[in-house]
Amino acid sequence: TLKLSSENNLEICVEDSGIGISSEAIPKLFKAFSQASSSTNRQYGGTGLGLTISKQLAQLMDGDLTATSQTNIGSAFTLTLPLIAGELNISPQPLTQKMDHLQGLLVEDNSIYAEIALSGLRQRGISMLHTKQTTKALEIINSTANLDFILFDLASIHGDVNRLLAQLEAMKDLPACIFIHSATFLTLNHEHWHPNFTFIAEKPLLSSDFPRLINNVLSQDDDQTDPKDMHHGINIKGMRILLAEDNSINQLVVKKLLETQGCVLDIAEDGA
Image 1 (cartoon, helix red, strand yellow):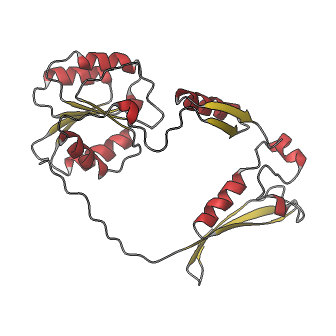
Image 2: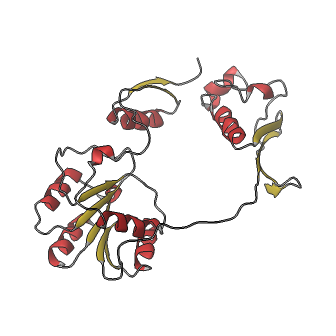
Image 3: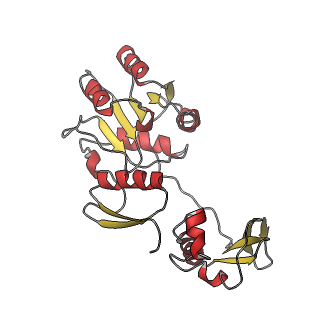
């Protein structure tokens, strides 16, 4: 349930009809690596960190997370967050490029992501072509003379990304190629990059972000950023990280992602 209290607090309550929690165990719920009983981990899994992290996040937003429960009846968890009235005052960065004369190609196999990108770009007057397949994209590039940019979602490239990059590099008069990816995606082998390649680790993007992205890339002079330096946030190479996760699939995914970033990973399946 969701409600707004008289104190302008937003209250979100999630209730279940499960096994419930005894009143003596309630205080343990929000302690790190603690669960209601020692049998809970063996029967239901979990590390005893989820509620601890959730409560800390709520408190960082000046809210709180509380729990009530009855054994064999169910539990209720309530998130309370203060709502502060504010004014929407957004001044978008002006675009230096005139957009209505541009023609671009989007390579995206996800229909929702494609609609988000295409709507934002076409609203600016950009003429857009779209394909889901990289083989078709290469055909369009070779047959279309006036392409100003190509926008790739690397998650849409089902195959050898390095091979695609090599094919693009071999083309004459290659337009600007913009590769959008998640911050942990880049495991590419190239040491030197085509000057028209730009790698952006900023997923997900809003519809309004795409014109700004195209504007920034096409407004660049001769300075190109090495894609290895495009990761946003802190440099985690060489860090030793403890992962508390009892799901083997999640362990495998996180281990692979962090090791590609040069981290040393220790895995704990529970608080012990």
